[in-house]
Image (cartoon, rainbow, N blue to C red; front, side, top):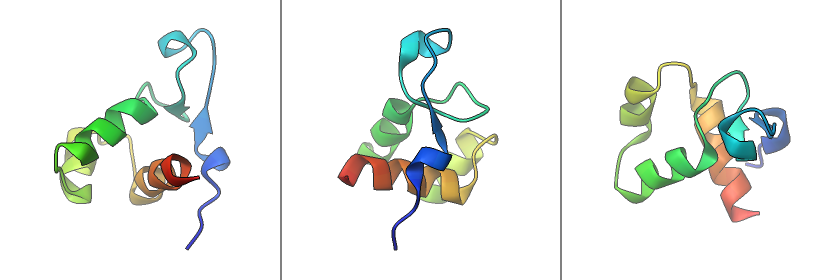
Length: 66
């Protein structure tokens, strides 16, 4: 399954130093990937960052493997 990660990600020089973030949030792609690398589950990430949804987290994974 391929998600259109561009629909979920944003880069703005005024938000988080121009790092890619999930649209409408200040949650960076790097943060989500670091949580996954630490072994957090999808549900744990969603609990930690309630502004995210499952598709947003999956879009980060899709972005990372491109």
